[in-house]
Image 1 (tube, helix red, strand yellow):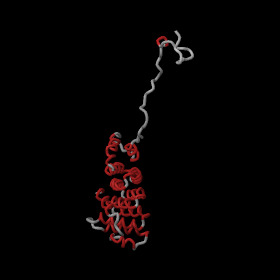
Image 2 (cartoon, rainbow, N blue to C red):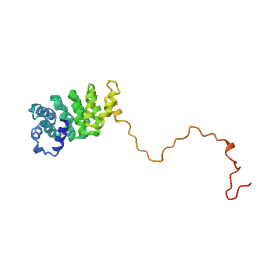
Image 3 (tube, rainbow, N blue to C red):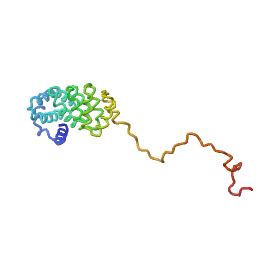
Image 4 (tube, one colour):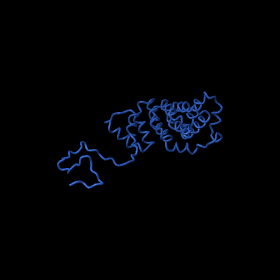
Length: 227
C-alpha cells in the first residue's frame, strides 16, 4: 500500500484546487478548525474510498495551510489510525521540510501504526530515514522492531545490515538509533597516493666487517681511489 500511495501522491502532485473535491469544503472553515474538519471528512468516508479521500483531504488542507501539516496529519491519525501513514506520506510529499514533525505527529496520535508511518514517509524522503525513524521512536518507544522493519521495507539496501545488527543482539531490543548507526557503518573515503609500505620494526643489524672499506671523509668521484 505504501508503494501505491507514493505513486498516487506523485501522479497527483500537479492537481489544482479546482480538481480537488475537498478544497471548497476546507477553505470555508477557519485555520483553527482545519485539522478537525479534515479528520471528520476522512472518518466519514466510505471504506472503499477512504484512502483516496485521505490523499485528497490532506492535499487540500495542507495546500491551504502548509504550516499546519503536522496538526492536520496528527488529527487524522487520531480519528482514523489506519490512515495515519497515508496522511503522513501525502503531507510530506507536499512539505518535505516538515517531514520529521509530520512523522512524529502521526506516530504520537497512532503509535500502533509507527512502522507503517516510517515506511511511508521514508519512501518519500529516503535521505531522512534516520531522523524520521528516531522521531517516531521518541513518541512510540515500544515500536522499535516495527520502526526498523519500516526502514528496511522503504530502503532495501538497509535490510541486510539491520538484520545483522539485530541478530548480533541475541534477541535483545537495542534502540532504533543504535541499530541504524551500526547498520550504516563508517564510510571510508577513497585513498589516493603511493602504495603503503610497512616500516620494519627495527633497523637491520649490519656487520661492518663484511661491508667493505669505508673511506673517511667521503669518496671523491672525480679522482680514482688510491691503491
